[in-house]
Amino acid sequence: MGFVLNPYDPCVANKVINGKQCTICWYVDDLKVSHMERDVVSDIIATIEKKYGKMTVTHGANHMYVGMDIEFTGDGEVNILMINYLKESIEAFPEDCTTTSKVNTPAASHLFEVNEECQKISVTDRKKNHIVAKLLFVAKRGRPDIQVPIAFLTSRFTKADEDDWKKLKRLLQYLQSTIDMPLTLSIDNMSIIKTWVDASYAIHNDMRSHTGGTIMMGKGALYAKSSKQKLNVKSST
Image 1: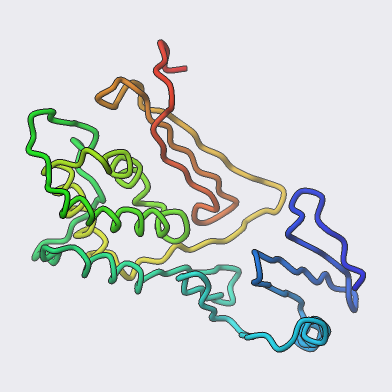
Image 2: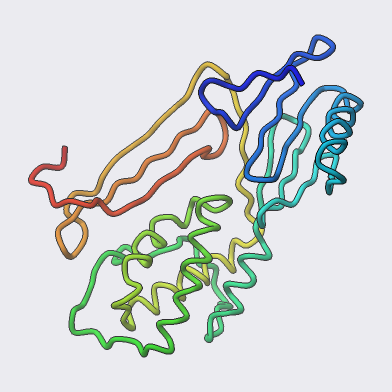
């Protein structure tokens, strides 16, 4: 159709139509088509459907994609919410996660502390760790603020104890308190990418360090990462 693949991302294609850029992004069998004129978008969809058959199409400012409620607010910002995913995780936990006082942070300062003498939880309760895997999916898409406790809890799958259970419950209480908080993204300048990275040296009980980083081009984290380092190191650098 005359589109040219982006040299940096082969899942993005561009073409100038009626003096304006048209962009198609795709992931597996899902497409996002953007252009200033709605008729151009409709024509491209019709051309694709001629070859591949009828597709499910949504237009406008609100979309649902892989569990994300995506809303384009019209002022250069996009909001991402994953309320249904969070509700499912909270309801799957066998204890009540509602609290009279608001939980302001996803983890306490003792998150990385491990008591080797703490009672291990049962195999049945350990299966509840699928909640952590569910929240890992959320943390990478709509709630980067929970990546630190998720990074820790995912490392405790096979050896979870009662302290880990409490840490998961606190995280769920935080999510219950902030369930309506969206990830808001915007771009100030297409030529400026801002990156922050840091590490907590030897913070884990096996003396490994923990790395955190984020990339922004305006409001909100376009990319965020929080992970335990794979090697023990002698220096924080």
